[in-house]
Length: 469
Image (cartoon, rainbow, N blue to C red; front, top):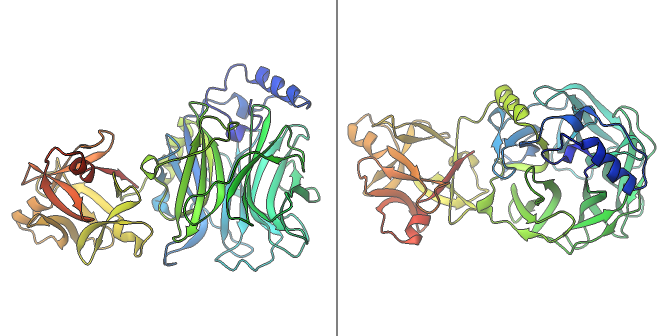
């Protein structure tokens, strides 16, 4: 039983109070009354909060961004991937946002008070907002968590039923090493004195806490070896966690773990944020259950992160909440095309040629496309460049280029394609040429061209793409 409604599984509608009592008694804790959040509709979707940094620093901002997903794997950024709220005090920027659904069903947003990448700054404050449903934000404030000459990084929060309060956990240097500190609060205005929450005897960073089935889980980065680990406890008491997983890493460098339970099964997902050799890339794992600690690497084919997202937070939401978020902030007016057999690569233009390249790259807008009604046939689609809107993808001698629309019938036919179920996977998409209907858009040597389907598995994978944002 999950005593934190931020991570409540789908379908916890009937019998919620009975299950809560059983789980809490198993922990030897007093029973708290069920909250409105516990009796809410089933969770059918997810919301992600994050900040952005572009690969070359162009267009970077440090406000709160939001994205939504129906499956928790493929994400749609909101508000054209622009911030929905930005701090107005302190450094004027945020990093490491966290979204918590409180016991009354509303939300609180916490974030590091830091703009840019000067990590030598000492700051005892964090940003805080209240929100009814993440379509608006009120009560902006900064709260001071300690008086130590150090940072206050990656704040997250959890409900502690034994105390009847929320714990705010964050990374700080306690004079000996980097540990996780905790302050307790009932209103995210007034906080208790800080105390050490987790100190395994070496430097740690980026705590995330999830409670399920009477067990509290804490995932973190070990700064000594650079890997992610999971710890667990039979309670949420400071100092009670013991590491139970082996080291976890993808890429050269990883941080900022997020642990998420599936809304529809016992499956758990672990996300990590990579910052080397490239910035702005997430990696993910799955496990049959959170308690197993048996994490398997997820292929990047299985998930797509929001563009330029950094140090994210994920919370389950209802279908109605997802609809309200889309209605309030809107889905992007652009798309990206992800390669099926090279899922770290996206269709982009470079020197007016179309190709697939691994992201991140600059300028990042080279991979953004408006799928407009086909220039030769509105039943088809044409790919209009976002960064060069007078140009469209078209084939010429079967190679695909980015050319300006000259108004001719030939150009418009060359620049029109028809969407079909993916040749390699019907859940993805393939694009058939309008004027050469036996030929499909595919990559070869990473360059795009149109070729006839030869029936091979290799061709069909080359000709299959995920359309998303």
